Length: 577
Image (tube, rainbow, N blue to C red; front, side):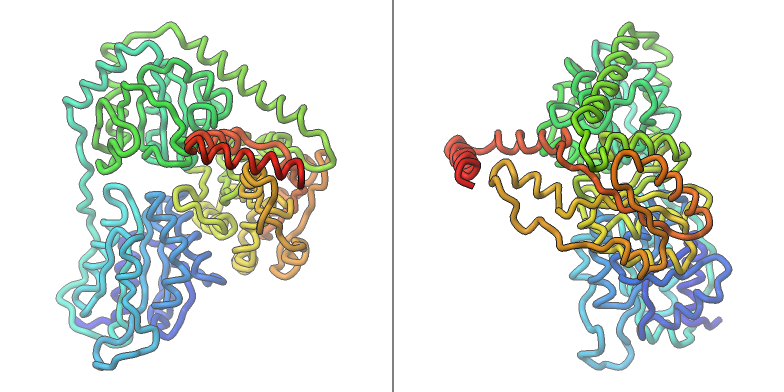
C-alpha cells in the first residue's frame, strides 16, 4: 500500500496515545499539521514560542496518562524548544519530539534549516532518529515512544524529512502498536538485605522523589508500618501526601523545614526511593545521610554518585515498595515511636507557620497566609505549578500538596519560564481539575505571553504572579556575600497591561486583607474558560530555610582564606555602603 509520511506519522502518534501536539507549523511540517487537523484523537496546539510548547508537553506528561508531544520545525524550532527538552531530560520526564527535516531527495546542500539537529540534541535526549524512508516512520515512532517511557523516562527526537511527509511511498504494513516495554524485577537478595537493615533500625526514615510518585497507598502503608518520617525531594513533593501526619517536607537537615530537621534527628537507616540525591533536594549536598542507606531507583546509574548506599535496589519503585511491604508485614510487627514522631512533626509545622505569621506584618502579602488561604480554597485534587525562583521554595515550605503528580515545577535543569506554559499543558491534560500556577515576576516575563494560547483555547487557569520587582532568589543570595544586588532588579512591570494584551482576567492582592477575597474571585472566574492573572504584592523579606541553609553550606565549604575574604568584603561594604 501507499501512504504519505504525514499520514504515517499521525497514525503512529494516535497509536501511542498522543492527544495533543505543541508547536508552530512551518514549511517543513505543514503536511503533518494538515493531517493532524483531520485526526479525531489529536488536537494540535499552536503556541507562541516553541520553548513554551516544550513546557506544555512536559506538563502533559507529568500530570496525565498521555505523553507530551511536540510538532516543530527544524533548526530554530528545535533550538527554541531546547530549554523544555533539557528540563524533561534532567527531570526524567518522557517527551516525544517530532521535527520536520530538510529534503533528502535533492542532493542539494545549504537548504533552509540545514543543520545537524542530532549533534546539538545529543546531550539532552535519550536518543534521536532521522527517518530515511516511508517504511521506517511508524516503527521509528514506536521505538522512540518506548525509549521515552522505559527505564528512567526522558525526551526523544525524531526527524522526518519534508519530502517523505509530502509524497506517498510504499509500505509493507500498517501495524498497530503493542508495548514491548519491560520493567526490571528487583533482586530478591537486595530486598532481603534491606529488610534486615530496616528491622535493626531504631529510627528509620524515608526520603522519596518523583520516582515514587506512582507508589500511592503502598508508600503510605510502608511509612506507617515503619512509623518513619517521610521527607521528599522538590520534584517529588507530591509523592507523599502533605496532610499525612508522617510527612515532614522537602529535604533533611538545616536547609529543610524544622519538621524535617527535627523528625530525622538520629535517623539510623534511610530508605531513599526514586530520588537521585541531586543538589537541590540535598541542600547543595549539605544533607547528612546515615551509613545504612537503602537506595531504590529505576536507573542504576544514580547509585553511589553522591552518597554511598549500603544496599542498592534496581527496580520500579512501586514493585520494590510492594515487596518490602509484604516482608515487613510478615516479620516486622510494630514500633513504639509512632506517636512521638507524629507529635514532633505536627508541633514543628505549627510553629513554623506561626513564625512566618508573626514575623511578617507589613503592608505586603505574607506568603504563609497566602498559601494557607490558597490551600483552603483549592480542591484536594487541584494541580499546582510553580516556576523557578524564590517562590518555588516558599511553595515547597508553605503549601500542602495532597495528591501524587499534582505539584510540578522545574528542578534539575531549573529553567525559569516554566510555569505559565506548564499550567496550560496541565489543564489540557486535566480539563476537569483546578490548575493554578505560581510564578515570580522575572519568570513571568519570560513566557507570560503564552497566556494568549490559554485565552484562545478557553483554558481557565489561574496564574499568581509574585511581584516584588527583583529576581529575588538570586538577589537574596547576593546580599550576604556582596551586600549589594547586581543585575537582579527588574524594570517597571505592568502586569495588568499584559492581562489586557492577552485577553485574560486580572486581579491584584495588595495586602493580607485581600488574600481570601481575591483568591475566591479568581478561582470562580476560571471555570468560565477565562484564564486569570493575579498580581500578588508579595513580601519576600523573610528568607526561606532553603535559602539560608544553602548559603551557610556553601560558605562553609570555602577555604579559610577565601571565607575570610568574602566575609571581610561583606562587612566592609555593610559599613561603607
